[in-house]
Length: 394
Ligand code: PMP
Image (cartoon, rainbow, N blue to C red; front, side, top):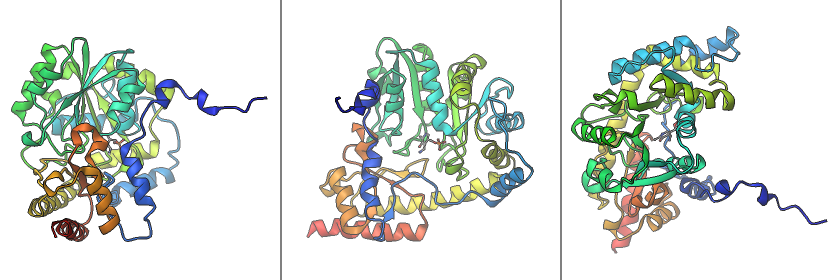
């Protein structure tokens, strides 16, 4: 009998899916675990979830809250989400049918792509971008259309680039502002032009605003709050970044009832509901967590100013990210491409940054440095990077 070839059971569209470039690089980092590596790699807050949130979840467990919740999420949490989104983003959503609680923004994204993409539908997204957009679109059998953003615009998405990339039949526009990995975002005026483009081309907008609380310059505007946009936008948000709750796996989506209902259909079969403990934590975060968010934002702001100043001084041209906790400096100015810079820096000076091409080819000549690391550690990391660059000059 012929020996089985398990590979043949993998679906075609999965076997052709590339592995995340970030993971490849972190396998290299993992091999160096005993060597004093400073990681500016993974996009995760160095803060532990504020104690009052953890305590509230512990009490919930003690009280025996160990059950499934409503598929859409606990009604009191949906109520708080609706209040929070109205207060901070100026969009009103009905808790009963316009809000769905998900397992992180990750699940919300997956639900949206699966609920709205027919095979072959075109989805526009700006690039460099979060590693999972392109593969998630592919998994939903959609066709991804990359729209470039540029260092010269501080990586803001422009309506001109959208016009140029647009193709007949485009159905969805995926936005992530502030953006992972560039820290780029848009002013209200730029966003108004993007909104006008979306209305003109009759696009559904998926707006991932997971870094919105971490806006350092100016105020964050949600595209959903602009005239005529709430009816064509799915607002995606969560707790991982602002509230330092990555491991809780909790997020949400808000939008027109019919669209939330479609996402809910996928969610009820795939996930049923988000974990009740995580939902309890999220409830406490929204009710009493805003001071902690402000304190963390202040820390990120200080760190941003430090790394941007140091990077530019050592020859890594770096715009000041207006939001998120990522800097996206250019390595070509010091005579290296993103791969040789990242691998060399890791091997010689034990600092991990991610090659920009992990976020799409628009990341060529850049690396992503996450500054969700303590201030003192960042100083040491910058000293090491400077040494690495100086050595090449001699
Ligand atoms: N969107 C963006 C832009 C992200 O950077 C991340 C996490 N790195 C996510 C979504 C996923 O977030 P969550 O932990 O809520 O699933």
